[in-house]
Length: 221
Image (cartoon, rainbow, N blue to C red; front, side, top):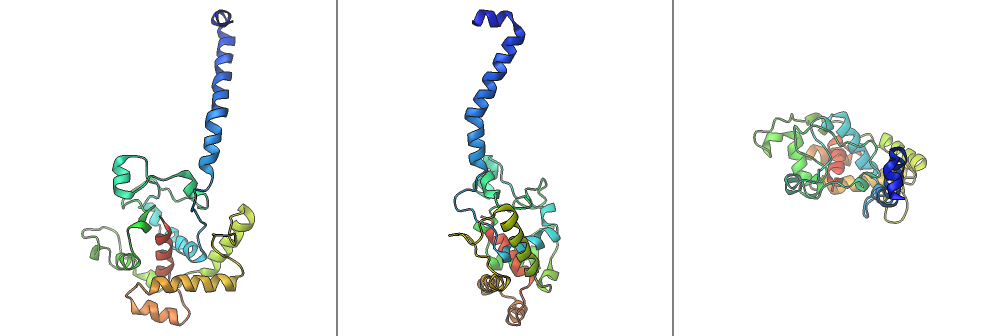
């Protein structure tokens, strides 16, 4: 059999192709499908976190910061565990990025605090001497768009079956319910902030963009 294949290059090539294809189906595809599933503990963004992600995109933070830690020692020593594909299961759009003018932010929630982000966004050099990042004082004045964030959460729940409202996942419910949850989440962040104007605005019923952005950055773990 093998000597016959050796004498017939075409059939030998076909046999090799079939063998490799079979190995791919048996060994590669099951693992690939498994890696595409959500990693245990991965959750969809809350409405407040989604509002913060919108600020992140609007301010082009992804132009200078990546969100993908590569499996190299130099990366994991600095940023933590390398990224797994299943961690991005509920991330739309992905913000992997390709440029690092600033550090990778995928696990920034593990080592930065709310008050650190507050100071960093208001005056980057106050916490990172020599930083070339501009200040983002205007996001301390603008209100977060909770309504649009809720609309996105509702849409991806219906269209992509993102498991909001299931056990262990963020609750969505009605817009009124989501707004109350966003305020409760914002209250915890604001309690750690020093800017009195943010607290005063919150008492008036407003949630500023800086609060939503911090909620988003804190979720990156």
